[in-house]
Image 1 (tube, rainbow, N blue to C red):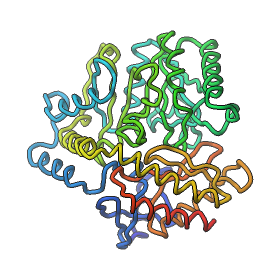
Image 2 (cartoon, rainbow, N blue to C red):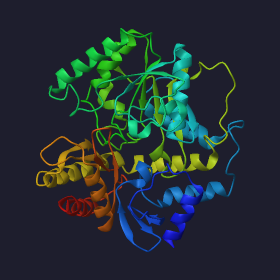
Image 3 (tube, rainbow, N blue to C red):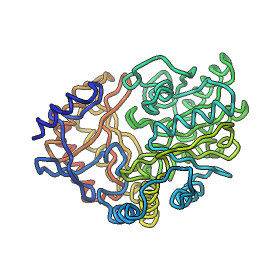
Image 4 (cartoon, one colour):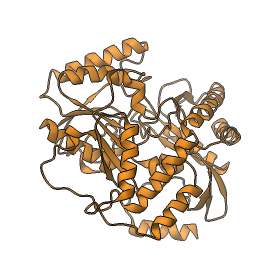
Length: 427
C-alpha cells in the first residue's frame, strides 16, 4: 500500500520535493508525542512535522476549538472584521516585546519572511539585505535570495542584493577558535567592514538559532552587539522566530531575548508551532514600520477563522501549562543525556542547542569533515527503533535535529535518548 502511494507521489509531484527515508513513511494519525504509520507501527515523534506540532498531536483543546469554529464559519478573508484574528493578534502583540506592535497574519513562515522583507525594503527604500551564513528563511523567490545555505538555494537570481555576515555558527569558520567575547567582537568588526563597502541596507535578517542549518547559533548577546551598530545607521533588525518562538528554547519565550541588551527587534516573524499543525504565520512590527506601505493589501487565507481558533487554544494551553519551563527542564536533561552518549561515539563532533531544540553534529571520526552518510544511517536506525528525528546543516555539517513537542515527559525523553544512543552506536 505504501509502495503504491510512493509511485503515485512520484507520478504527480516534483522530483525536488524531498522525502525522508529509503522507504518513505506515511503517517496516518498521532496522539500526544507519538504517531502511527500506515502499517500500524508506532513512533516517538522527536521532529513534530518540522517543529510544527509544538504542543502535542491531537491536543484536545485545539481539536475542540477547530471543531467548534468549523461549525460556525471557516473563512471570510481579511476584508471583514474577524474576532479570532483580533484576539490572537492582541495576545501576540503583547507577548512580542515590540512597542506599539502591529500584527499581520500569513499562511507560512516563508510568507511571513517575504512580508518582513517587503516592509523593511519599503520603509528603508533599499533592496540591500544583510543575512547570516548558514541561514534558511523559506522557499519563495525573495526568501531563497537571502538563504545562506546552498542546499536550500536553487537559484542565484533575486530581487534583493544580499550580503552575508559571520556569526551564525559558533564552532566553525574563521572565528571559531576565539572565546565568546572575542568572537562577538570579530563578528561586529566584520559587520562594520561590510557596511563600509555597500549602500545602506534595509535590514539584517537572522534566526536566533539556525533551524535548517543544524540548530547552530552564535553566543548570547551577538545580535545585541549587531543591533547597536545597525541602529546607528537606521538599519532594521528582523528576528526570524519561525523555529525559535513560543518558548521552544526553554530559557526564553523568543530567541531574540538571548540578545535583548539593545532592545527588541524592529520586525519579528513567526509560524510553525503556534498553529500546532494549522497553517499560521505572521509578522510583528512597530506601527511605523508595519504601516509604511502606501498601497492596498489583504490576505485571503492569512488570519482565517479556523486557524486563529486553533492558535488561540494552542497558545492558551502553552502558557497555562508553562511549556517553556518544561522545554527548559526536560530539554536540559535530554541534552546532557545525549552529551554523555556523544562522549563515547567517535562520529559525534558536538551536541548543541537549548531547550527542546537540539542538534547532534556528525563528522568522520577524528576529523571535522562532514559525514552525510552517517547522518542518513542514524536517521534510518532511529526509525527502525521507533523514533523520528530530523537532519540538517550547511555545506560542511551533517546534523541530526531533535525537536519534540513541548509537552515531552522525562520518561519519553529517556526513551528517545536510548533509541538515539543505539542508532549512534550502530555507526
